[in-house]
Image (cartoon, rainbow, N blue to C red; front, side, top):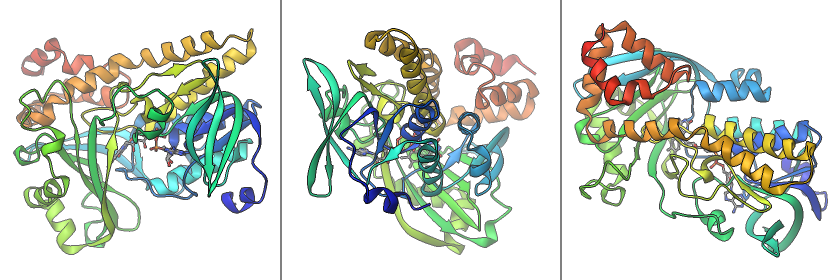
Length: 416
Ligand SMILES: Cc1cc2nc3c(=O)[nH]c(=O)nc-3n(C[C@H](O)[C@H](O)[C@H](O)COP(=O)(O)OP(=O)(O)OC[C@H]3O[C@@H](n4cnc5c(N)ncnc54)[C@H](O)[C@@H]3O)c2cc1C
């Protein structure tokens, strides 16, 4: 199905019930959920799909579960590389493999599948359209002004959903941005190296003194291609010394360092071929940096800060919160017309996720003090219970507070 060729020929709608801006995981999940329930949804993105998105492409268990909930898991797994462990590698080379049901799929493919699934469900995808500003009447958002090619267009909607990711321009234009600077930055490239197939099988995440306050990763895609990158999901709390803030870090240098200090990264690069350029992008984490809603408007996905600090993973929570936004609007549709109740419902659903995000923010101290990774890995190698608790956190079957709290830290030394 060619999405844009089909839709470009039809005139733009003047109105719809819900206008979703951004066809990444959050926007497409929201649009699909609404369309399946019979809502008249229009989905708009500034890019024609399939489009690239700078990412590590790792689908951890929360993403897996959300893809299943959306009914697209089989389609995704038909083209993704299945992965059964996260490999945590400490500065001294110690390693622990934490089991989980996961996968790797380049975002160009993943987001195309999700966007097509939204269209299949009945969402109308616009030809590439850039959101410029909300339409407002007496403080209520009633649609959006878009730029389509050279032309400015207006679409009226009962609800406007911003699922515009980590770049803050749309949030700023809509008056929803509370913090322009991102929470983190990361850089990745694709390398083809057939000799490394079977040697890097897990989602390997690497901490090292020379990478602080960040980390490196290598994730295996299909066909001998690997996603390799470095990131700094910087925490406002952990960088009080001001010496290691994002502005002081040249990610390309960190990437080079990663390929020097971690032997598999060195081998991957030395014997492989870089496909395309190394590309960087911002992250917005910890459910912070933006208002979640205002009358007539809902912010979801990474625009609302749904990426985890510490690991930089956000596809799963972008999907989940896109679904939550849709569910709140659907619940509101079933009852009396009450905009405030829909917004309160959505915001409560987001806030219920906040403790988990806060704990990832706390765990971010490992990036600043990588010796903590050595300690946890060393203990987890000896303690099946600790490994079980790490598995519970990864699979979201137990609370990360168990690991990261002071009590959890004490148990690190006492537990067998
Ligand atoms: C280098 C890097 C590595 C990462 N690795 C991982 C990983 O391995 N696993 C993981 O789970 N997460 C990872 N993340 C985080 C993940 O990429 C995000 O959490 C996720 O993309 C958020 O999804 P989203 O739908 O909210 O936003 P996005 O995926 O960013 O989608 C937003 C969409 O909105 C569109 N848009 C933006 N502004 C406008 C506008 N004004 N008008 C119209 N359209 C607009 C964009 O074109 C885009 O298509 C990584 C991030 C980075 C930067």
